[in-house]
Image (tube, rainbow, N blue to C red; front, side, top):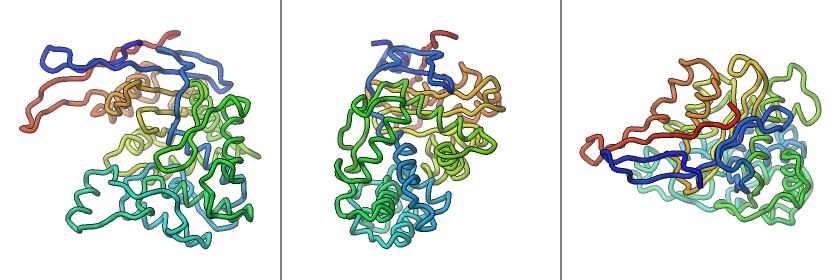
Length: 342
């Protein structure tokens, strides 16, 4: 394994973390890498924009009057803040579905602030509070748009999931049997494919977002890009890396985390990367997200994405301060993942 980051306590090495990075251009050609850029990787929630594309292409958004904020929530792993839960429930109402139709379970929120609020109020979360409730609400709407039964929308052989599987493979430039499928934490199928194909997927989203007048599938991808970058607070929430990343770069890139430390970014040609659109994908072997965000921000710095001021907005993620329960600084995280090809 190729060590990408080391955590020190004092001057002693406490942990080392292996990781892999793939960077591709708009055509999907590998430009730079670290570790194994073809590692078979479960994209988890980083696949949500591709799943959302399958929903968009059913015509569900127009049929049920979903706006770009709704689309952003479909791509989200949200904090379960009131604005997230309220929008998910409103989306269900638009497609004549109910919270009881959701096949995702309830769980503790991803936000400590929301968790403390729930404890104070003795609140018991329901399925609408799931960080994936927007994705599920979108798929219920897609089932309605296809005139399919909604009860089994989460099952692999449902017409919605059959469309999702085909869409994911096409976006990754793979045959359908080139994508493996498992069951995600939210009870939906989740894909696995080579890491550089995840970068390819996000390069396509960013390339669509850079087009002046996209048509066909590119128009749908451009809408996803626009939704996520216009409403980064819905894609994650306060105190979360995805929201901070897209805010920092002012709409010039789109980024999404996947559980157990996968991450993908699409950078459109322009101010952030003047020489062309690129896609970036990162996977940390042990699933540590603190390490993941440090590596992602280091990769952006190596590639010279955006301005120094934009990159500096993410310094708390690139150089996290490790403290004990008394607030005393106890160690540091050092990233050493030089990209091959630079």
